[in-house]
Structures are given as C-alpha cells and as structure tokens.
Length: 141
Image 1 (tube, helix red, strand yellow):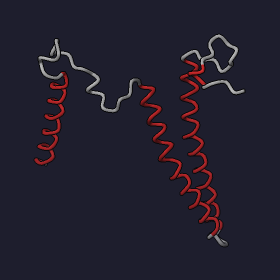
Image 2 (image 1 turned 90 degrees about the vertical axis):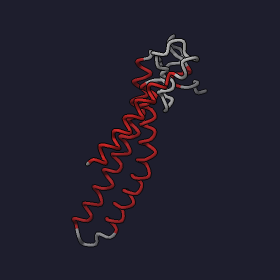
Image 3 (image 1 turned 45 degrees about the horizontal axis):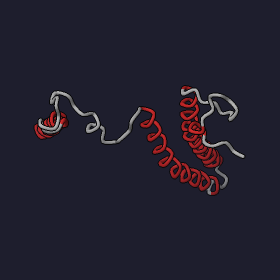
Image 4 (image 1 turned 90 degrees about the horizontal axis):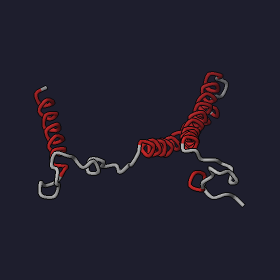
C-alpha cells in the first residue's frame, strides 16, 4: 500500500511541475502566470469534434478485424454444429451480432459527419446557396 501511495505521489508531483513549467522560462513569456495551452495538448486536436472523429476512426480500425474474426468463428460453429441445434443457433447469433456491430461502427461515423454538416449549415445540393465543397466534397459529374 505504501508503494502505491508513493508512486501516485511521484506521478502527481511530476504532473503538477510539468503544468507549472509549461509556460516556459520567465524570460520568454511576458506573463509567467499564464499557461500556453498548446504545450498542454499533446494529441494536437483543435476541437472536440476532432477528438470524436479520431475515436470513431480508431473504433473502426479495431472493430473491423474483430468483427471479421467473429464472423469466421460463427461460421465455424455452424459448420461444426452437426446435429446440435444449440451450436447452429449460437453460430447464427454470433454472425448476426458481429454484423450489427459493424453497422453501428460505420453508422456512428456517418451520423457524426451528418450532424456536423447540418450544424455548420452545409447543404448537400450543389445549386444551393449554403453548398460548400468543404462539407461534402466536390460535386460528382
């Protein structure tokens, strides 16, 4: 217990000192009481939306191989079920829920993009006043 408290204390100490010294040397910062937030942002995201998009991208990268393995496992359960209806049912459920997971992960990115574009006032119609190629990409020929 003492070791855990000691380690947490050292981590908090290092964290607090890094915040204090984030403003840089006193000669470089005219107001040493302010903290430069750019040095406290190690991930480099400029907005909460960027964080959400990165998390969804990471979820997609992780979920797709797992879903593929689950579909293969479900197919294996179906193929090896023989006369056991429980294994057949279990294999079907595994494949069903793996596909549902893929749909949820893909829909999350699409819904995020749609909500962002609607809140920014973007229009999907190239003839509309609010249309911007930055929202949906260039128009298709």
